[in-house]
Length: 130
Image 1 (spheres, rainbow, N blue to C red):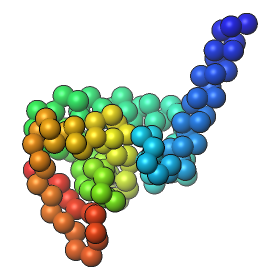
Image 2 (cartoon, helix red, strand yellow; image 1 turned 180 degrees about the vertical axis):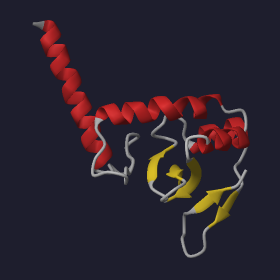
Image 3 (tube, one colour; image 1 turned 90 degrees about the horizontal axis):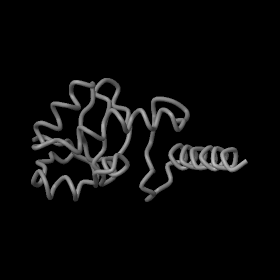
Image 4 (cartoon, rainbow, N blue to C red; image 1 turned 30 degrees about the vertical axis):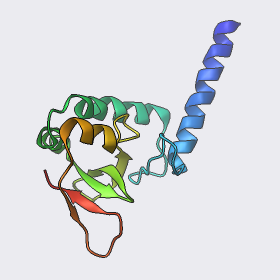
C-alpha cells in the first residue's frame, strides 16, 4: 500500500517536472526550452542531465567544458541572459547551465569569467569564446 502511494507520488512529481520544463516555466530551476521536440518527458530530462551535468561539474576550464560539449555536438552561448547549451547543428536551445545544476555564477567562481562575444541586435545574447 505504501509502495503504491510512493510510486504514485513519484509519477506525479515527474509529470509536474515535465510540465514545468515544457511550459518554459520562467525563472524555475527546471525551466528550459526543448526546441527539438514538442515536449520533453522526465526520462529524456534525466538522460540529458546524466549526459551533461558531469561535464559541467568536472570541468577545470572553460576550454575543457567547451571541448567536452563539442564531442556531443553542442556548444555554449548566452541566450536571454542565461548560459545555455546549444545544438551545434541547427542551433536548438537544449537547456540552461542552471537547469543542469551549475549556474553561470558557480562556473564563473570556479573557472573564471567567460569571454563572451555579444551578438549584434540582441540585448542579452552572445557566444562563449574561451
